Length: 83
Ligand SMILES: [Zn+2]
Image 1 (cartoon, rainbow, N blue to C red):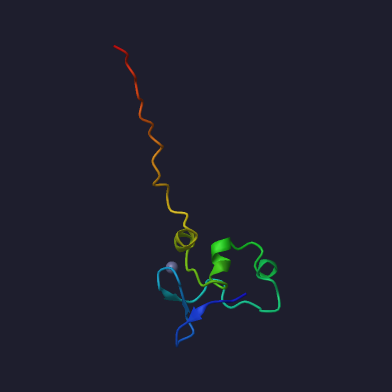
Image 2 (image 1 turned 90 degrees about the vertical axis):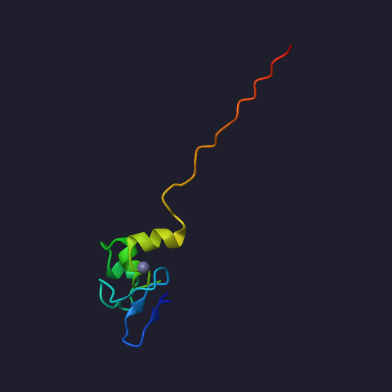
């Protein structure tokens, strides 16, 4: 499934960062599954020909895989003292 957006020059537009570029793998053969046409290409490289995501970084952002910013859940200790 090719859902890419292209500009007037035929360049692929990254939906994440808006960069205009030519995919590393060139153009794909629409009659062959992309996994079969480029079996050794990293997933994000193939994504250039599918979703138009330009890089591993944008791919991670697109999926929401940001570097972990979650802080470990800090538990407050409640110490009850009886008088
Ligand atoms: Zn991008």
